[in-house]
Length: 389
Picture (cartoon, rainbow, N blue to C red):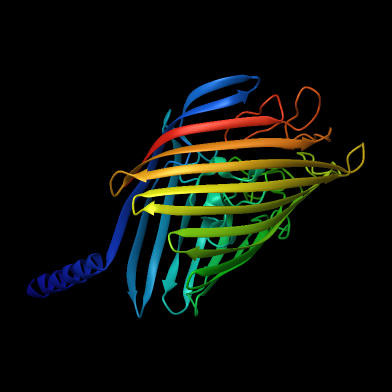
């Protein structure tokens, strides 16, 4: 009996030690705004919205010390709409992120699950929507994933340690289809180098059959869909490069991205191809430690080929403005203004293609999260509050 009690005491001590070396953190963001839009479906609107500067979310992050510098890690992150409490990301419980892995300060981090591609954390940091603005600052339809709309299932992701200012990311996502290994897979590479006030980043991602199925079920080839793409196509490729420079309280950034979508549309056989080119310049300035202002201009063109009328080009001009004031350590209030104007003539509209049309067939303006305008112009203004916990 005495030996049994001693064994139980030893096990209790081991359990206590493990608990002391582990941690789980609950975190989140709640964002709501009063939003005015100039034209949605032919009418102006004043709405309460929950997707302005930040997407609302809550999540759990955990770590456990495994010894020798190794740590087990996990993240489970849920997206939701605070206006009505609805789940985001097509009603997924943890639709934003869900992964587990191992990290080491010298060897990097290896994770498995539903994750962001290599664009996020590299090229994304050079954009206004990814660095300091929000979802409505995105390039049209978030065609280059710099607002991380794409989240990838079945993925293995490696993030290197910081090596003399450079951090690299490599990712591969399996199709999970028996006998169809290459269909519906993706891979991605990216890196960012920082040296004092200067930073440069580049990334590339390739997706097979993006957007074919955005619900958490199987698709026609028996594989779990790779990603929640905003544009349905047979193949998508994104490549981009950007740079930034901090000068005192100001930070200037420029970036370029190219996103190619082949066989756009739900049939995957339309023969219509989109080639988006995004050019952005932005600046943010800290007037004080608690007051930030930012401005950005984006020009996007889309060269469409394979349509019945031959090659066509559609283009967008977009201006983003933000004022953000922290009223406490975790709470801020903000005002943002977004203006968009489109150009170009009539264009092919395959089923699953994202570009809406005006009544005369020209491209309609549509700022991210808004319904399409019935004209080439759309303006959105928001005043909101963000609380982080």
